[in-house]
Image (cartoon, rainbow, N blue to C red; front, top):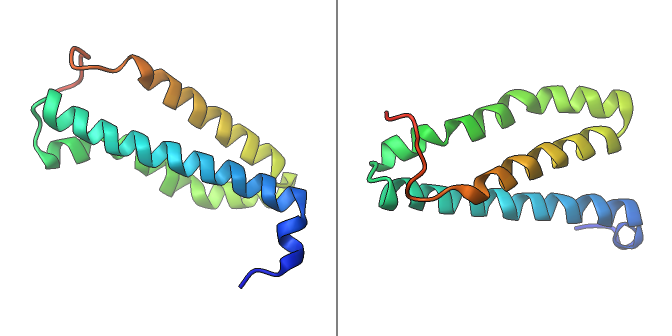
Length: 105
């Protein structure tokens, strides 16, 4: 399915390793945030899902923009910027806990 030469290309492996790490972190955050909101925050599944929309909506809206940026600047700038923003957002969630004040829906 994938040409063997690609698996030896550092750029291909590096980009896919970063994408793998970002997806693992994002899915882990979604899973734990959903549990936190439902169990510790006593919110319904619908309310928890609604509260997580701010994480998903920018991904959907910025996908076409990232394609244009990649075509214009190459993959490094959008990938580096997206990784830095995602890492900052994920790190900001380290302090989340049951006592975290949230907007009630």
